[in-house]
Amino acid sequence: MEMTNQALEHLVDSLAIKIQYGVKITDEDIEDWNEIDITYQVGDIVRGADFIEDRIDIKYVVDADRRYLSAQLLMKFGGPNLYIDTNKRVVKGYWGCDEFIKGYWEDPMNIEQACEELYQQAG
Image 1 (cartoon, rainbow, N blue to C red):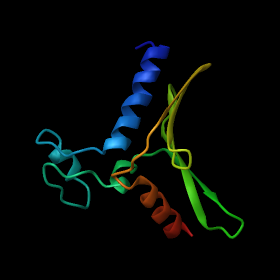
Image 2: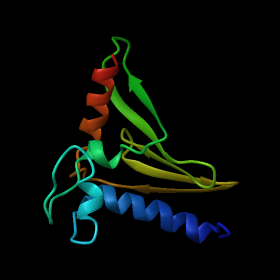
Image 3: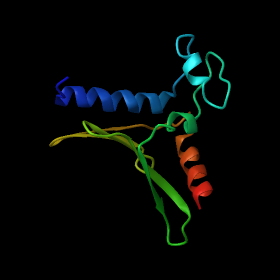
């Protein structure tokens, strides 16, 4: 599939919408999500830790005292690249010279909290 600017925008928009509204468990995907350590019910919102479990990389932003401030998660790589920036609350997509950024305002899956917990566990 050839990546166009419109396709890049669609991928970024789709990820931003999932973050903004949360991913709700449906009858069709409940078995996939229940392969994780937690048991979900239809209608539940996926936990942030489960949503970001397949991330490729995570960079933490910390202050001078090494306290967690935010994170940048690489969610897709190699064409296109998709990032979640929890500080700016945006999803960024890059493909060649093309760039598309979409904001989100809510975090019902608690992705930010999941990132902070991962940082605490690593530290």
